[in-house]
Length: 81
Image 1 (cartoon, helix red, strand yellow):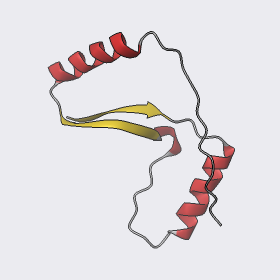
Image 2 (tube, helix red, strand yellow; image 1 turned 180 degrees about the vertical axis):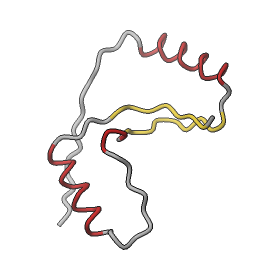
Image 3 (cartoon, rainbow, N blue to C red; image 1 turned 90 degrees about the vertical axis):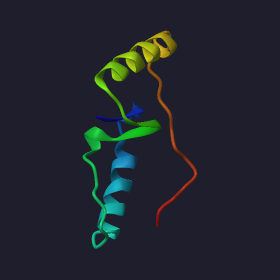
Image 4 (spheres, one colour; image 1 turned 135 degrees about the vertical axis):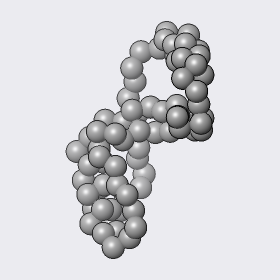
């Protein structure tokens, strides 16, 4: 299976509106827009990965990131007119 390591993004109202503006402005382009519920920030694309490898990656990620709590971030500085 094709896998990647990512951070789930829960868009706020401003990001949702920006995405709507982009979709409208690029309606004639060949772009496959994802559902906002699937929005994520890819940290590393792993490519083809076996089920055994997926389990190993999950364990390593749990060991490395398990001690950290949920966090939030803000993108700022760009305006779409």
